[in-house]
Every structure is written in structure tokens, then in C-alpha cells.
Length: 189
Ligand code: 5GP
Image (spheres, rainbow, N blue to C red):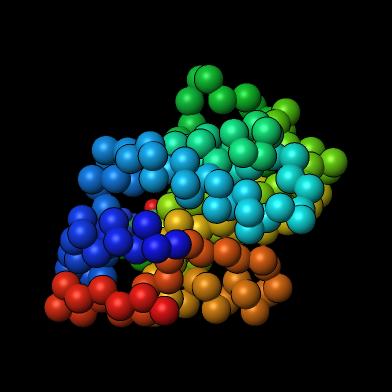
């Protein structure tokens, strides 16, 4: 998606440890016009799939999923990462390992909001090692729901997640795939 790639080039900053900071439009301040274009593009890419619900993870996935959902006319469910009194006792859990934070974390979704009739599209901001997507997929699998695909805004193609998930026959659609970002120079696939 050219508009997104331009934005990454203009405003993205490469941090130590191969982390791309996109706080000015995706992860802190939100560029709603761009998010609308992202939502339309996801709809185009998954137009042949019958999606009943979009699943994402708090926090960064929520805005992207919520805007995209307007083009699919379906609800968004976001997996929670922390326990709280607000969360129902009956939850589906998924787990993921964060290489950046070097710890395991949990995803939780109330059993009320995902069922075996659901055709789920997972949406997330980044795909790196694929752990987040695997954690969300675990929830879809536990609910016996059907995973129709995964929409990613920025895939870091030099990390293993994309290859691993495509090898598992998951329909992954990434709007920008970065092949390298050494010395602050970002190269797209
Ligand atoms: P994975 O589980 O695929 O390794 O990592 C995915 C999650 O880690 C994303 O949802 C995102 O929150 C975070 N993440 C991974 N790499 C980056 C990055 O380069 N920049 C930012 N901003 N977040 C990242």
C-alpha cells in the first residue's frame, strides 16, 4: 500500500533491536485518514471471505480493527492482556512469548464473544516473530471458530513470523512488508 509505505519512510524511526517506531500515526497518535484507507484495503483483500467478527489484541490493534470493522460491518473483539474484575470468569486463553520484553504473556477473551459459528479475521499492527498471531489463533481454535485470515499493517519480513504462518496455510495479508531496515534505511519487498 503506497500511502502507508510513504508514511513509514517519512515518519518511521528505526530503533535498536530492529524495532520500527511509528508513534506519529499508528501506535500513539493515530492518523485516521490513513486508518480509513487501511480499513478499505483490508476489506478489498478479504472481500471473498465471509467475516463475522474481527479479533485483535489490546492496545495497538484496537484502533486499526475498529476502523476496519466499519467496512466489514462486524463487531470487534479485542483480547485482554491483564486480568481485571471486569473480565468474565469464563475465558478462552492464548499465550505468546515476547522476544522484545523477554516474557510470556496471556491473551484472554470472554467465551461470550466468540463462538463456533464465527468466521474470524485477525487484525494487528505488526507481524514480527508471529507470537501474537499464534496466541490469538489459539483463542479462535479453542472456541472452535473458523479463522478466515490475518490482516497485518506492517510485516517485518526479515523476522520469522510471516514465513511460519504462511507455511501453516494461514491467509496472511500484509499492507507493507519490510525486508531490511539497517542504518535507518527502510527497504520494502
Ligand atoms: P510478534 O509476536 O509477531 O513477534 O510481534 C508482534 C507484536 O509486537 C505486535 O503486535 C507489536 O505490538 C509488537 N512489535 C513487534 N515488532 C515491532 C516493531 O518493530 N515496532 C512496533 N512498534 N511494534 C512491534
